[in-house]
Image (cartoon, rainbow, N blue to C red; front, side, top):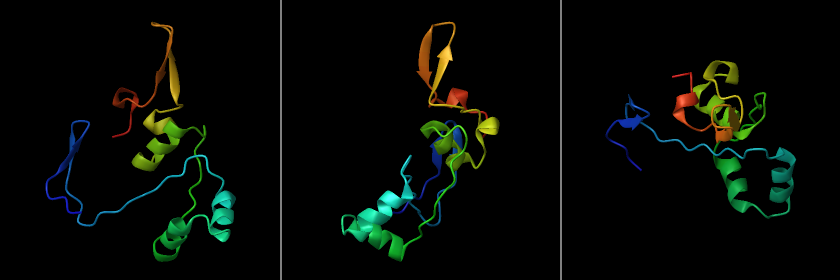
Length: 109
């Protein structure tokens, strides 16, 4: 895959990457489950990816919810900096829980 034009996300333009990379995040997955499945021959593609690519274990941020972890991966910052502290936020004005996946909650560029 070749990307030639800049990538625009949330009103910010990023130059096209020289080399594309793919990151797979298995959120909330115990690494031993994957090791066992590979040993039992149930995940040959993941085994091949581990053998021919890069395999790293990331440490979770606290709180260990999907949205704070994903934003820490994307921004390189902890929740106290990027502002996404959970999956949902209670809005007293509406009395509703709101999914914290909107850019309006993000404080880190």
